[in-house]
Image (cartoon, rainbow over all chains, first blue to last red; front, top):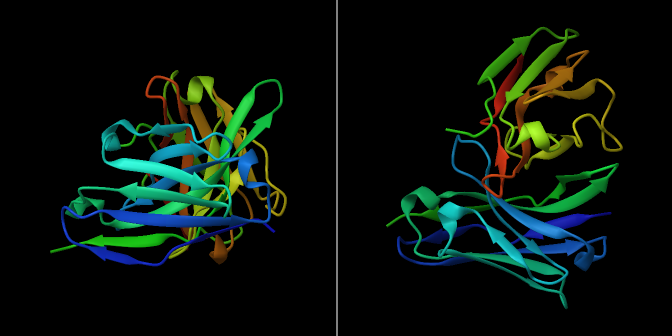
Length: 124
Length: 110
């Protein structure tokens, strides 16, 4: 069965960096992309960006450009999300999600499997 | 402020039906497929509907999706207390070159 297992909770000071991992199993890792989505306390879902596990191509949300880096390690089927220059409003649960493409005349994209989430707390 | 607009909350009695709307524009819902996600308290989101109206295996047919123009709708029939959750719509926005979500709708089963 498909599983995405994320690394544990982190507490960071403002200005620091955090790197969250997402280990995939149960499917061919390089055939799908991985998106990262975060959720601030009591708030909705915010898409952060996407990485192709096939070739490493990325697409980052404009508001995070310059602060976020997504990467993959195909030898361990693991995706990573690094966020730098952390601020208090980066406090959130960070999710990885597998992006699947469905074709029926045109392409449909959606997130069919999600990691359990990683709480990142930014506090001085 | 989310790109896609959902009502903050809806409620209905057990056994009844409820609909949740998701309004967007031509750059997102109008020209791309919509998916819906259920987030039970304290858990990760779960895919309910993809490609506007398709259910993944394991999702009961009490859940349905539709799209018309720049709006989409999630329908839930035969409401159960276990359906109490936050529901999010999502789609690709071609102008922003980004995935966008609605602000979420909290469903209360009275």
